[in-house]
Amino acid sequence: MDTLGFDIGGTDVKAGRMGPNGEVREETRFSTPVDQPPEELVSQIANAVRKLGSSLPVGVACAGIIRARDGFVAASPNLPQLRGFPLRSALEQELSRAVAVLNDANAFVLAEVRTGAGRGFHDVIGLTIGTGVGGGIVLQGKLHTGRSGYGGELGHVILDASGRLCACGNRGCLEALVCRAAILEEYAAQGGRNAADPETVAHRAAAGESAAIRTWDAIGARLGLGLGSLANIFDPELFIVGGGISKANELLLKPARVTLEDAALAPTDQLPEVRVAELSNAAGWIGAAAQAREIE
Ligand SMILES: [Zn+2]
Image 1 (cartoon, rainbow, N blue to C red):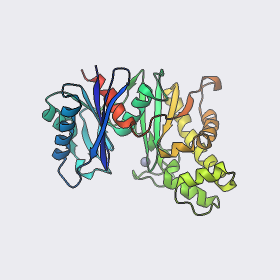
Image 2: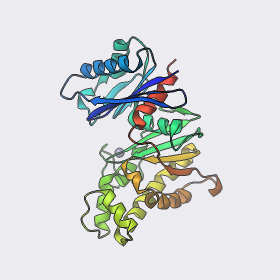
Image 3: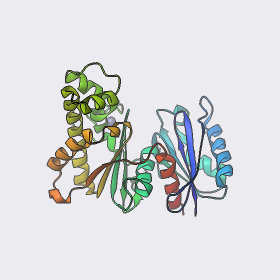
């Protein structure tokens, strides 16, 4: 059966209809209603469901701290109007059926396992690195979010208790050490010329600039420590790294594999692969559509 997926972002809602083998049948998007009560968003999603295939299972991904158990939005930095909103029950009431609700990083990992870099793998850990760091855990093909559904926030694994302050309030989280701002700070510390964004630092590294190369070595090394710790906990088959920063590709992953190997306890030939994500920004709705299959 086909399923429908939605990805609620700060500026627009991406949506689509996916076939049983991950085929993208149809894609659409509409503007996120801002400065309006969350009920307006719910009714716009319901309208889109009617257009895309009204009787099909629906999954909805949303940025923020989502309690996966019941789809309650505890916080959503880009969508402050959703804070404290029972998103799943509101959608279920509007659509008169069960709906899957998950956070956008979890949706990203599921999408990559279903149709991207993780095809054919069953135990996969995903990280999306950008302004922040989102995470998701897929064990035996299923999303693992813990007792209440707040689990999988891998960006807030603490690597250095006295490290850089994180947006979450803790110090030295993986997010605080490898996010966009951390990359630019590291580049400045390495003596790099003014750079507006990490893409510029990546271009300069690719062109052989030593401050830029040292920056990616340092950031990749920190990422690898996080991956090594996660490998020791989960023993996954594969790590998938996505988000804007993953465009740095091997500049980031090569040093990460080195510290991953150092930090992990398993024999080297048993360590998980590390790959960059394959899907574009459609991953959110595709992952939500994949999770819709789990609705009983
Ligand atoms: Zn944090």
